Length: 269
Image 1 (cartoon, rainbow, N blue to C red):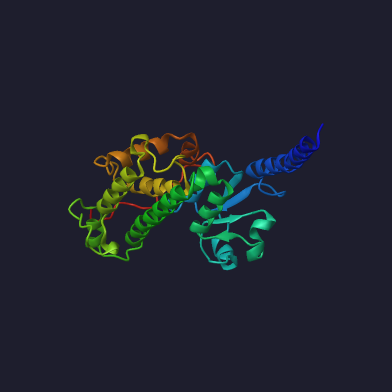
Image 2 (cartoon, rainbow, N blue to C red):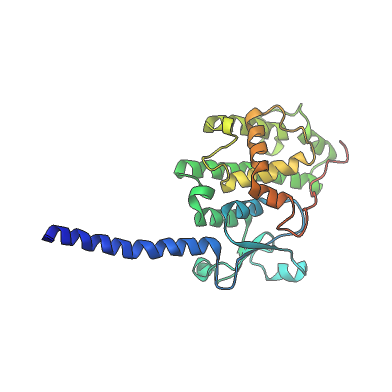
């Protein structure tokens, strides 16, 4: 064997020595989060802010869903005093915030995206940006539903949110009705170029798409015919709903029973 061949062989041996353990390490992190067991997602037994449940199931990460047994006591101990939270993270992942629970849905979604990037974050930076925009738009819809639920808006405003006559995209964003949001989402899925496949991204299940499905599902529980005039968005919803991982959450298989509807039709409708 000549000198050049010997050098090449040595380099390949070094690369192999490092690459094989790394692949095993990544695989182990997919199946078991810590030595203490799977990730733990805490949330109420309600179909409300459940995007992270869909994201965890689609990611393939090992997790269990838990309900707070004593919410007042738990709330007092949490960094941000709200759910969902993610616990039992690997020590290195939680080191910067004292090994405590990971709070705030957006942070949980970003964590899932970073743990399983190609599927949950997007195939590239551009798809990551698609996912982030979908998360933001879905959260805007969620906040509108929450304002109606908690009666922070008038009955008239609640009815107006669901009215097909309220389609002024030039009004203040806070005044957008559901059909303004849906129209914008329909135009966006067309821009993304995968509407025929019912996807915004290559995987179709990025964290942003999980958040959007969860929010649209909450809306469809109130008005089932909501998407009938939005072809691309309806394709997205129907395709996502049929995914096996989605059915695990919708069936209640991981949540000790089907999660009951939280957002209801306004009394004035």
